[in-house]
Amino acid sequence: MKKLILMGRSMSGKTTLTQALKGEEIRYYKTQDVKHYESFIDTPGEYAQSHRLGKALALYTYEADVVGILVAANEPYSLFPPNVTAQANRECIGIVTKIDLPDANIPLADRWLSIAGCKKIFHVNSLKGEGVGDILNYLKEEN
Image (cartoon, rainbow, N blue to C red; front, side, top):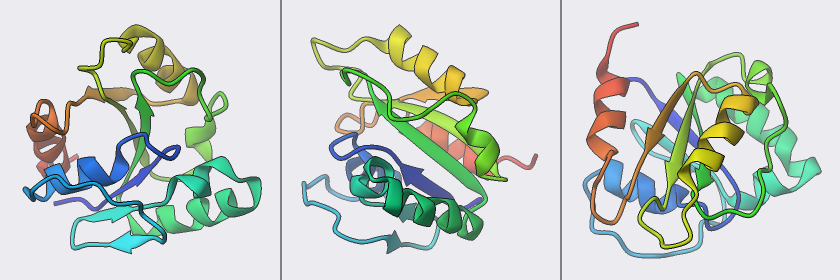
């Protein structure tokens, strides 16, 4: 299986998705540092939100095969500039989380991820497991 690093703003659902991908019970906790697992890397949202820490994210992408850029479906704006995926030097996928929320705007989140440079976009509800299997299958594919 390819190793996936997840990056996105605080509260975008990175840790919850990591738990869902690992088949664990979902329980909230705030990620304070970069967490390395066998097939996943979970990063704190502050790394994506801070210019100084953002450079560390670029370096951490070298420890993964695939970069997962997360945008919650109810976010008011995107942190990711156009074509940011070019900086990763890795395959990048977009992941729209929190698709079940009443204020979810999935088409807008898709647009933001597309503008950021993501060619493949997944939609997930980590609490119900919706879309989680699609990501796991994608990580198992030989490309």
